[in-house]
Figure 1 (cartoon, rainbow, N blue to C red):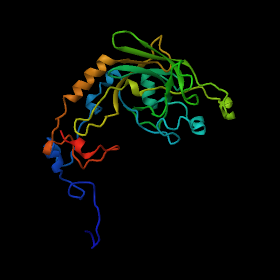
Figure 2 (figure 1 turned 135 degrees about the horizontal axis):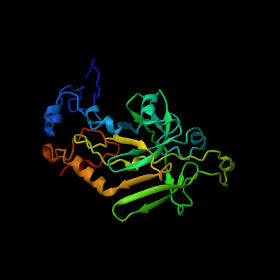
Figure 3 (figure 1 turned 180 degrees about the vertical axis):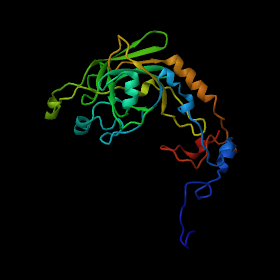
Figure 4 (figure 1 turned 180 degrees about the horizontal axis):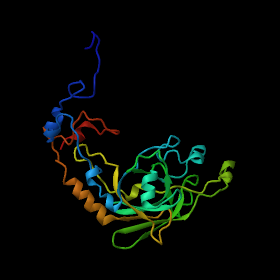
Length: 273
């Protein structure tokens, strides 16, 4: 009750905005029972600047697009159809690149090759690459999205390595929509997400999207949109992060706290081990 009226309160066990969290204690993280600062995997101490290591922000959103759901929205994709690497002029000078040049962005498990956009809208020492873009289809996927999707080839080296290369840009095509023959853009962006290893946050289990990357000028045989992933390295990174967890069960044999929200909540009995 608040002011004599029934209220639901916050989605916590006490229905209050909790400063002290009994949940963190119950789930084996007592050192975080009260808010504190946690140094993440992209903290400055994790960066070797002599090797051109940077924190990459891959989750910022262009105001015109919504994940991949706007790939069929022709007017939105007409406005925004590429996702260059945002980089501050100071960092661009140090790397010797200009707007339109291509860089190889190395992750823990591979790399992607993207164009540079030099802008003071980016903080020095940090780079960013928007998601939403870089969707792809194979030549055999004739009926896939053609407004916003590059055509690619995918090659496997037989040792866990997979390479994706762009072999066809976006082009006008005939359809029941006359605007499809008026497409004037050709760039579908770069699919960066696949080069990121799985980083399950040890406490919440949610994916930690920000990445530590190493920048270098594109190699002689690199082409815009190239992507490479080593699945063996990917599995090793996953096991390393899994080892940082403090596994369930929690109180009463729970897999995770019942009161923590999730997008698609299973039936309650599925929470118990």
